[in-house]
Length: 265
Ligand code: F6R
Image (cartoon, rainbow, N blue to C red):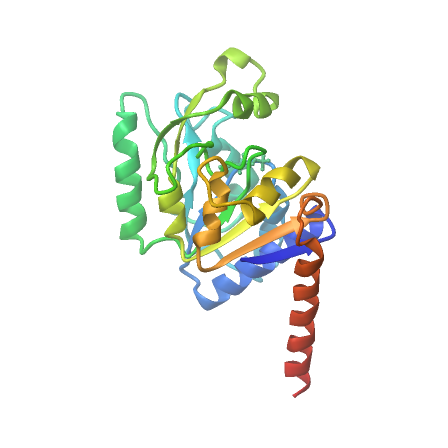
């Protein structure tokens, strides 16, 4: 795991956007795994800016989002489809037909969505880079604690805590869904590269468990310790409970020195 501690949300977004830009330059038809929620918003704003300035293009990019609520239509402002259109897709040059979420339309069988979504991801060559946020309880996607570490895309019931944390987005609590379709932890682990973003003190304990705790179903994000290529971008607050905090800063410093010496050579 490459753990990078940055000053604040803006630095996390700038670094995340740089990593995504590099990927798109190498592979203009990359397949991106996207997350909704608060954390990646600043990164999406950077990407929109880059696209408007002609630094990158999403023309040949395909995206797969991690999750979507069951029972909300695409037009519902609280659906993740609506969120993604509003916060990213409408502002970049992506083909709307290349943006996918595990959506369950009226009359569709929610149990059939997961396998079909995974087949679609496979048919596009798999995910090159997966962006993740982390829940205060260590969830990734909507894989709540005690999810199987090898789980696949499926229907998942949200914990009361997650419902509570997301309540602020819903005017009418009765309309807030308690179930979602989420990519599984096993599915996420198949992405070739993972970028986990966390900002704010409320994430500090989950971040500590994910990076320094045992690999355990009680902290789904801890499974990322078993992935070959993970970059974790943290602001100071999210990193504040890490026991190896000083070590991670030391590693970053050594890397900078190494890169500088290569540039000088
Ligand atoms: C969103 C998702 C969730 C969020 C997590 C953090 O698609 O899958 O796992 O990434 O709940 O949410 P924020 O970023 O709002 O704190």
